Amino acid sequence: MATRTLSLEVPEELVRMLGSPEAAAAKAKEALVLQLLREAEISQGQAAALLGITRWDILDLMAQHDILSGPVTPEEVEEELATVHRLSERGMACGDNQQQ
Image 1: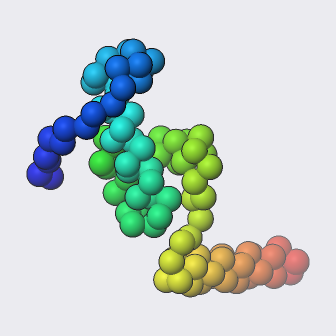
Image 2 (image 1 turned 45 degrees about the horizontal axis):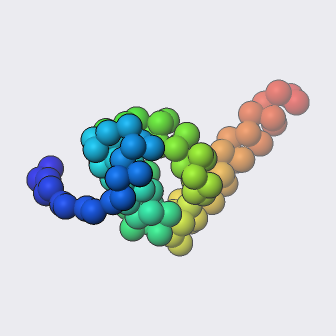
Image 3 (image 1 turned 60 degrees about the horizontal axis):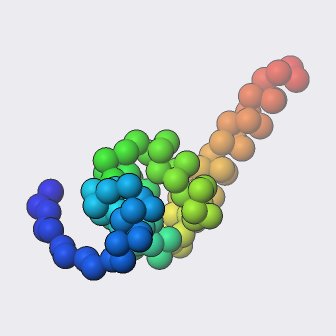
């Protein structure tokens, strides 16, 4: 993935609070990625990859920042409904076998 370095002016106080310019840059990148995720511009997998963390870690980060982890597009809602329907049919089939 190609990268680009951006210049960002922040008050020195913020850099001191975060410990170093590198920590401030990492926090700014995290905030940008999380905002794109919140706006459904990128997926959870893309966010995790951009931040160099696992899908489990992105879910934890989303919870910390009150970002919903459920479906956000109509296609994702349909996919989740299909999965629930498929699983419920399996459960009913298993239940039928257990009753016999």
